Amino acid sequence: MVDHPEIEHPEIESLIRAAVHDYDDALAVGDARRATSWFAVAADDDDGDDGADGPTAGQRWVSRFGPTGEQFGAEQIAAARAAQPATGPAERIHDDVVTLDTDTALHLAVLRRDGADIQRTQVWRRRADGWRIVHAHVSQRPAVAS
Image (cartoon, rainbow, N blue to C red; front, side, top):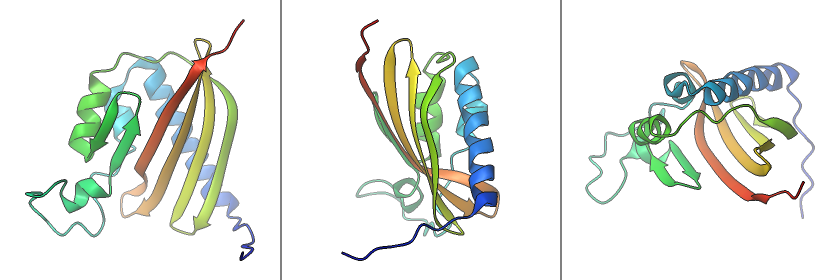
């Protein structure tokens, strides 16, 4: 096993936290356009594949997996988010940013909303248009007894 020292980039962590807070605020009030603006539109290396055998190159690298299914590409993510109501505010149980390098970071969160815990992992990449989510995975644990 290789031990990798943590890569610390406080300026990146600060930028990601601010973006995540804006994303969560947008979800809370039902602003689907603002929430989905944090997702990358396509991969930086999108090769223009027509997707005949599955998702296009851009869709493969911009995805969201969650309780309502999988979305590949910005259009599917935007459509799914637009179909969802406002989430309301959430309590942050766990909130961490892990920088993998100067262009990639993970945001790891556990949020509590309406008695249920939501686990979320987001992969953020630095792009020409700023930091954007290239993949998100969301799952929900059963409701917590009061």
